[in-house]
Image 1 (cartoon, rainbow, N blue to C red):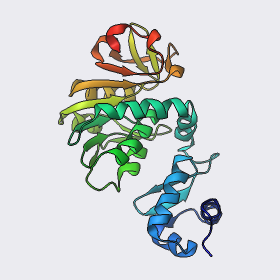
Image 2: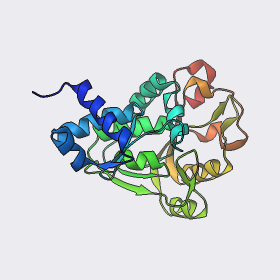
Image 3: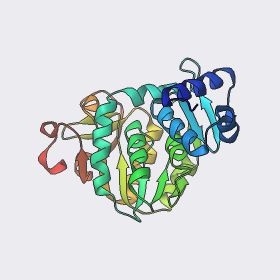
Length: 246
């Protein structure tokens, strides 16, 4: 008798609690399910922040010791707002677009929605989790910026990353920020994040900011963009922003 969905997923987590990682073929065999069913379960578990799935390997997320836990904590903040913002953002994407996408958790949610809404896109990103999420999307050309790993942010940064980004021109740049200050611009917690995002901004035609209310007027030291450099801001609170930025 086939197991119910929740029972299957609990069994997956039980297996992963005993093993650091497992390939999807072996896991499907252990669970006695098809790869299609397993991938569906893994996708939902990954969206819930319980597993990491990519390149045919699955591993459980250890919230205390996994360096990815900071990303997952940020992903859970204002998750419903991020979902709504990302759903609106895909309205500004067209088939065959060339997109820069930053490493933010909001853009991670956006990338997941892209994978279900489009058949052919060219995406360049410095976000490791975005690369993993899109790695098996048939029809997408997904390119890593390369560079050095920025611990805790799950992002790629540095001169090599900026050099590659500087050699590509995208028609749209989707990004978020650590802070959005009214009439001033966007700010980042890391100078390296600010630098590579700046390179993406300068090498794209349309700049589209995805930002939830928790980022308004908070303190972040490194400025990335002037408010008038941004073509569109997608947020839930239009009253916060100058009308020309909406």
